[in-house]
Length: 333
Image (cartoon, rainbow, N blue to C red; front, side, top):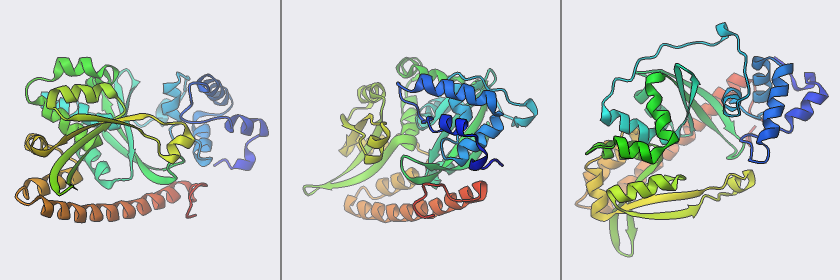
């Protein structure tokens, strides 16, 4: 494996200019630098160097995104067997909601790839349980320079019968208008809640009520949902300190459904995320005493936080096993 000292100085100067994700001002320069580096290094060697330096662990994704040609030895790419999508409209709409938390793109004319990352073991388990019957799921321990912590990157290899996921991502509203029929709206909402939703019991001014929230940076989706299932929309700038530093601030739009409307919605949806399933079970089985439900949810959240903390230690260990040392920015190294 190459070490930093073995990288020529002129190569180091190019590497220091790389920033992922590139801003609108640096896209052209990033594309030129990647193309130049791939002329001098093999893909495999450049990929190892970029990972070692903590620049990116997703070289192939960025080459596809920026339309930079990549020549990889055919025998070096493991092609895992996949199965055609055989679900019904309900399953299709659930996957469209769930896929909001994934990047989806065509890897080739016959292959679809979905990628995401999380510090929640429940989300990783959900990815396996949903997609493994159709494709191959791979886990890769990574480190986020933005959030300064470890997370598990998960990749799903699917075949071209999952093109509908890309069509959905390309034009969400048209896709939803053409494909949501009857109660499939609740399958779509189930997927959204599994990917970007939350269930809670709120105590406010001596009132106790159930609330369901679905958040997305795409305002059109939230507005479309509001028309279909009600609620009200809240918008705020997703301006955590780390996001401000990285220049990745986006407005976050949230659909909030409360009181009886939230309870009625919970009775119609079918989430699969293990944490969301448990929370829904607690709420629906203690409607007679929502304060008791809130106490149980608080205890459940404490257990989830413990599991996440333990999982982060596991990811860190896997990262060290893979790379030989902690990430250079690891605050605990």
